[in-house]
Structures are given as C-alpha cells and as structure tokens.
Length: 251
Image (tube, rainbow, N blue to C red; front, side, top):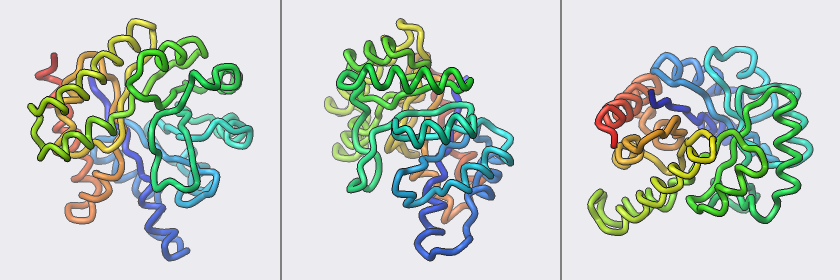
C-alpha cells in the first residue's frame, strides 16, 4: 500500500521566523501521525535555517512512526545520522542560496564518496535513500553505490502541471509523468525501492500515486500550507485519501 511521509520543516520555519519556541515540530509530527502519516521527514540543513539538532533528537525519541532524515552527504551530517539512527537517511544536494532543494543529487559525479557515505549509514543500520532526477544513468549509479531507495524528483512534473493550467492531459505533463514512470521501472528492476516527491500537492498528486510500484510519496509544503486553514491532522488525512484512491485505480 502506498505510504505518505510528511515533511514538517516549515513548522520550524515559522518558529524560527520569531526565534521562539512555538510552533513545536514534535507537536506537528504527532498531529501528522494522527492524520494518517506513515512517516515524518525533516531536513537538518547545514545552516540550520529551520529544523534544529534538538528537534531531530526529540523527534527520534518521541515519534511513533518512522523518521526520514534528509541530509547533505557531509561528515557532520553522517555522524549525526549514525548517532540518532533514523529509520531512513536521504541524501540530497544542498546550497545555502536556495529556498528549497532544487534538482536531484548528482550521483554520477561523486560515486566514490557517496558509496563510502552509504556504507557508513548502512553499517549503522540505517536505510539509505538518494534524491535524484528521473534520469536513468543517475539511477544506475545509485544502484552501484548501494542505495536502498531512490526518491525520484517530481518537481519538473509539478511545474509542468501548474504551467499548463493543471491539465493532466497536456503533452508536457504527460511527458514528465512518463519520465517518472520509466525511472521508477528501472529503480525496481535494479532492486531498489521507488519513492517520489517534491512540489506535489492536492491537485497533482494522483497521477503520481497511480504509478505502479511507487512505495512512498514525501510531501511537505502543500500539507503545511493547507493546515493553516483546516488543521494539520485534516490536511494529512485529505492527502492520504487522495493517494489511496489513486493507488487503488493504479496502472
């Protein structure tokens, strides 16, 4: 059954805007869990712009669903992950100039170093994931370095969907969705788990959720945005329902 990982970074973004103690990301994790989230995702950035080290420690101790730690492949972050032991660590590219993660990790350009990072995480008992673009050579490289999971970047699909007036049948949207489909097929063929995420929302999620063998979708900004109006528990419940309906009508 398809699963939903809820990214709660932007609860911390709101807190950090006032340099205060609320809203608490741990409370958000509990509400997301009660709404049906199968996992919680946080990105501990090197500049600590939202999630802080203490947040990750408390989430590790207090949440009752799996924790996915997004992280750059740096020695500092690898050591933090090995100490905390989240259920999954997802390696992502990171730039201090960016608003959010832009584009997938270039595994091809740094295979040797990433293979060492993944080996260290695996030795600590952590499932390892890489966030990559829907490019077949990158997927093949992910398999070579020992990744257990490939999360396929859905941003190009989501941006095409929005630019074409939310028309799921627009040629550009169909082409981007087909890229994700082909990527997912290769991920599965090479023995890895097929996850997907980035810029998915309540309007564009169902075509992705219908794809064969997609295991998890990781969604944050859209859910946190909707929660302002309906509450986080309800926002998660609505997203999970959309995903399940689509998966049941899957390819």
